[in-house]
Image 1 (cartoon, rainbow, N blue to C red):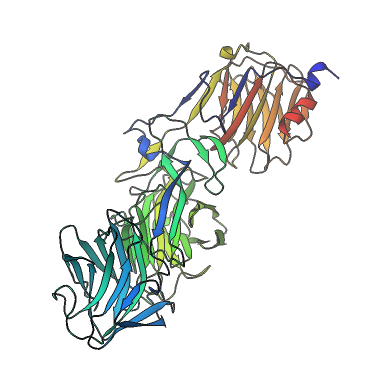
Image 2 (image 1 turned 90 degrees about the vertical axis):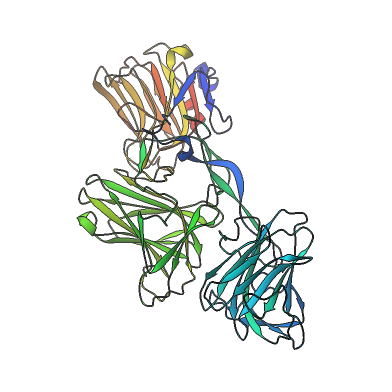
Length: 601
């Protein structure tokens, strides 16, 4: 056994992109984030290791207000709420008294909270929300569904919006430093603060929520709470801070580092990626509400697609974009259940671009449902109930293709009775022509946008490697499941001389060498679809390749040409990995088969 079988020399270049979080100064990284040709840095995204407050409800037992104090009134539980559950309550005033339900502030010295709840008239029509100790600040609401309210006092804002089953959602912005908020019965919309007449009237109430997210005019989606306040944090899909910044990405489900993200150029043809209220989208039997929840990027920009009350019919929204040819088209949407647990995509027949193909996604289990044969689909968990739903289908014509997003009551079903309340949160809608996979989000606001390709390379001369010298490279990474996606390559800037590690298909990788414009060898790494560690030995008449510590496949007849560039996440005549590279180690010698297996196991 040779000495180097057990003791290989130290690598001349070693990069740990999963832990170092930086680019070696001998390497060059670039991406042209220079609008208007390419998307601005704010449109280029990656999963960071940061978290944001995604949802909160500072009340407890929020459905039936059982933790709110009560003065001169009774509460009857198990009433039907706007969501169809039996979790609402009926509040009834006592004769000769002033009816009050009290919310005791849970945050001392907070600057503001938004208090919201669903209410429905029974034998009483008007209610008031006020602040204890400040007779100048209050809001009166009319519960008969007309949407009328009257806000009084400096800094007090409010809103009232219709909901299902006769309920309206009332919201108020109030400053609550060490005090309380009241809900009281009122005689009329213009009544003074607190009713003075006897009241035995009753209202239905459900879904109390106090939050520092949003405001009364932009009420966030209701978040139910139990015996403890509900506060959820989620991974942040972050945009790069500066142009051309490398993206060191983390798995949003477990927080583990995935390495540096290397992608091809991509264009989002949806002109408003996170605003379904724009005219780019057309709703049917639905309502589109803007900025009602915190999106995966931590901003209050997620929209609600809410069904109407139409029975036995579909509910949703559609958009059109230019397919650009008879190529693969990929649609992706970040979605979260908000009463409806299923979402469906339809590649519509409009203009003959598609053939009316459907796919369903389960936003409760995170599973792809029924999928027509012309579609390839996947779903990715983004934590805190968010999923990225992805579908690819080949266009049949170069024209404007229509994509329909349906709310669904079950798998393989888009026709049902709407309740005017339920829906799905949507954000980051993307349509990519000539794309067989969903690239990272390219956000848009008024026009399509293009993210430039990532480039990461090292001049081997800077590492003391002579062109054509024997060497060995170890790479830990994953490329897109598409033929030609490259993990790593060496070349001389021409098509005459190169050595590459490529995806051959979705099932395995290949290692190939070309010298003086002539193919020398193509070595397949069998069963390597799930492997992430690869080794490639470049030695005259002794090529060696291995994946995942398996058997070493060799070729003893190949000659090597001149190469002077090592491309990481790319290769000559390949495409960017469209995946992640964790580690690269380059040795200025040919390592033995034993070493190759040990370094990739």
